[in-house]
Length: 225
Image (cartoon, rainbow, N blue to C red; front, side):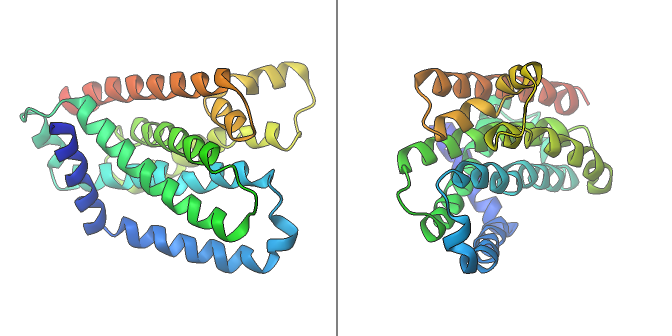
C-alpha cells in the first residue's frame, strides 16, 4: 500500500530531522516543570487543556518545520512530478505527527494524572493532532522562510487555543459561547470531557474539512507555484 510506504518514509524523515528527540525533550520538560506540583495541578479537568496546549508544538509547529525543510531541500517541488497524490502526502504527514503527539501526551498524562479515561484521551488527541497538523500546513505552505512564518503563526495559535476559554468557563456572553461552540477544536475537547457521538462526529468533520483545505493550499502553493 503506497500510503503505508509514504508513512514509513515520513517517520524516517522525522527521526532524521530530530523531531522525536525534541518530543522526548518536551516530555522531560513537562515532567520537570509540573511533576513537583502534581498534587495541586493534576485535576482531571486539566487534562484536555494540557492535550490542547501540548499538541501545538508536536503537530502545528512540527508540520511547519517539515514543510520548510522540504521546501529548502527542493523536495516539495520534486513531488509534483511523482505519482504521489496531495492527499497521500498530507494524510501521511498529519497522521505520523498526530501519532507522535498522542504518544507524547499519553506519557505526560501517565505521570501527572490518575483515573484517566484513556480511550477518550487517545481519540481526542489523535483528532486534535490531525486537525492541528493540517492547520500547520495551511499556514506554512505560503511562506518560504521561518522568520516570515513566525509572527502569523502566533496569531493562528492564539485562535487555535480559544477553546481553553470555554473549557475553564471564562466565556460569559451567549453569542461568544455560540461562536466557541463552532470552533474546529471544540468537538474534540468536548469528547475528551465526556461528550457523546455528536462531539466525536463533529471532530471527524473538522478533520475532514482541515484536510480538504490543506489539499486546496497544496494545489495552490505547490502544484501551481
